[in-house]
View 1 (tube, helix red, strand yellow):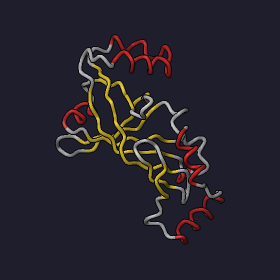
View 2 (view 1 turned 120 degrees about the horizontal axis):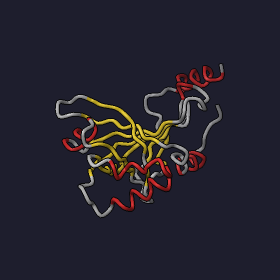
View 3 (view 1 turned 90 degrees about the vertical axis):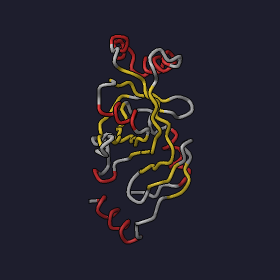
View 4 (view 1 turned 60 degrees about the vertical axis):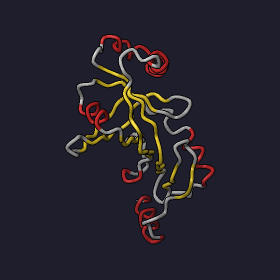
Length: 179
């Protein structure tokens, strides 16, 4: 696996979610129980993430109780060079629910229509569902072995995240990846 420069990583970061249709979402209940699932998503020009989910599902209850969430975008394993080095981007996020008839709904619905075409025609029938806005904060971009980068909420590479990895550990992983 070739070394990735900060400049190359920034280019990857700027287009990372272009071909991804769903976001992995983790939330925590009032009782402290974690819950993970996924949802189709859209993104606005500021990098905020929007999902459309039922108010009856665990994520909705969890985000209403605690606005903290964790989101992850993950490379499809069928195209990954190595299962342990799947490319991924993840963030801490602040979640907020749109109330019924929120003025922002039309704009976000249009983003879903642009991305998913007629697959979102059912939205108007889902009376118990709402849009949620997920505002990313600090995060990481992993592009392979030894290529994990700290990123800012505005999607800028801050630094190579090399804490906790020794040079020999990274070399061993790279050697294993070739096999």
